[in-house]
Amino acid sequence: MNKILARFLIIVVMSNLLNSCKNKRREIGSHTQKKEIDSEVNLKEDSYQPGLDWKLAWADEFEAKTIDKNNWNFQVVEAGRFNEEWQRYTNSSKNAYIEDGRLVIRAIHESDDHGKDQYTSARLHTANKQSWKYGKIAARIKLPQGKGMWPAFWMLGADIDENGGDTPWPQCGEIDILELYGTKDNGVVEANAHYADANGKHGMMGAASFKLDQGSFADDFHVFELEWDATKIAWLVDGKQYASMPITAAEFSEFHKEFFILLNIAVGGTYAGRPDSTSTFPQYMHLDWVRVYQKK
Image (cartoon, rainbow, N blue to C red; front, side, top):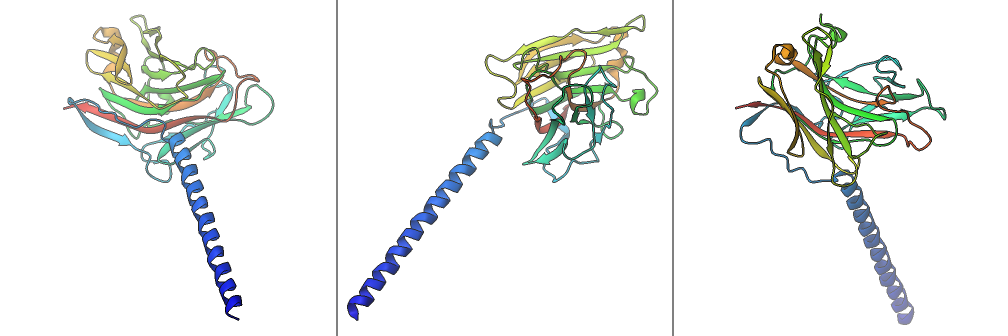
């Protein structure tokens, strides 16, 4: 009897040890998996500092569960309205949503065909909700990539007729803080500014490029900044200035009034090239934060 009891106790102890080991393996496996996911989400530690001369005037850190409608509008637009682009812009949560403390804009290919109205995406803006004259406008973004991808972080004059104002484009002014043309180079972003010249015709600074030393803008988060005052506009990536434009001449009057922010992914278009069988979908634009600073 004692031998039977002893054997039973040994079996119980061994069973508990085996279960303990299994549980530890599960915990270790789960922890390892979580770390791998976290390392994919947090691709780069955020150490951004605006500089001692700047104070925060407005920000969206995307910490709420849903997109803050006090800050952002969904612009619903049919395919082809702008620049012969192939996507239509929707207000669907499939195309723009908050996830893990970030705003995500998602471009979707909805069929096996490549052509107009076969894609959906989102275009968000702060018109009639948030606008600014001068300052540092900055965002920490991980961009999409591939042929036909055309993400942008940009600004329009707050009086544009497209959003209830009385001024047409380009008289309203446009500042492109970043545009990326995946058909050209996934490691290059461009800056530009548009306005009406002395004859009332479309004028522009002309695209200025910033190229990464290696890799693409889809590999990691980068900080894109615009520094704008009464004398000039300057563009920076990760604190490095690569373009500037003086705005003191009379023809640059557009740039001395309030502008609002836009964020979007276009698919295809006159200037962006077209997606093809090499283009992968969905494509994502991840925004960790958007901030506006004013001079102290």
